[in-house]
Amino acid sequence: MYHASEAAIVFFVKKYVNVERSGTPEMAMSEKIRNFAGIKYPPQKAFRLIMEVDKVLYISQEIAPYLPQNVMSGLCRDLPQGIQELGVEVRTFMPRYGAINKRRNQLHEVIRLSGLNIVIDDTDHPLIIKVATLQPSRMQVYFIDSDDYFQRHNSGALETQSLASENDERLMFFARGVLETVRKLRWPPVVIHCSGWISALVPLYIRKSYAKDPAFRNVKVVYSLFADEMESPLDARAVEKLRMDGFSAKDLAVISGGPVDTAALHRIAMQYSDGVVQAVADAPVEAVEAAKASGKPFMAFPSEEGYAAAYMDFYKNL
Image (cartoon, rainbow, N blue to C red; front, side):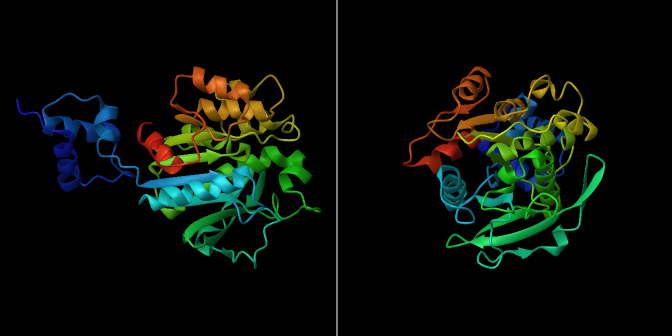
């Protein structure tokens, strides 16, 4: 029997099967590949042969220069730019904190993406999407905005600090706001990379609430561990509010029965991610050890030289 090479399989699928990442069921696609090839690839491997890391979505807690330069904000700017320079299509999301100056940073609202009401704890919260272009790379940065959860601070601190009692709902709103916007963009990413504890609920929502959505059906999720921590745990009703959003007690087991602090958010983010990155040398030791013990792909703190290529290799091997 003829056995096609992997290159031939890729050519066949792209030319004759009209693959669309957002619409072709994985099992059906891999069956077509195996029938052509005369080999018995497992469905996951057969499908991954045609998957190129050509679209990466970054969901970040902070990005410079919209917020002051620090380890996280600098990396969350430089990494997407580095990946984009490798020929990958990149889009980035972050919260629209009140500290971000709209005029100075040339933010403007995207009307076609705004207007959705997100229900949290039985209350509607309008979603506003703003966008800016980061120069000189011309990388688009989307901002999740809300009159209820952002722009309401009374000091130089971010809302996650000055209004910390609302962080549970703020995290839920941010996660759902990003994913709903990606759906509207009709831009299905191959990899979603989450950085910072404010993005920690995104993997949970992808795997449980959006698991059957064509935009996220085959996506790989990466979570980066940073040293930054919340000043206080989430509201005591955080788990209850997540249950009201459709999650089961089993889904939330790793954050139940105790305070939902930064360590708990790391646990649930890693549980629903496909890979974990130690983004900084001083990432929490407990979380790093848990990531190593999980059996999932793990990348230790990479050297500063050539780190974009190291991340790209990590994405390709998820």
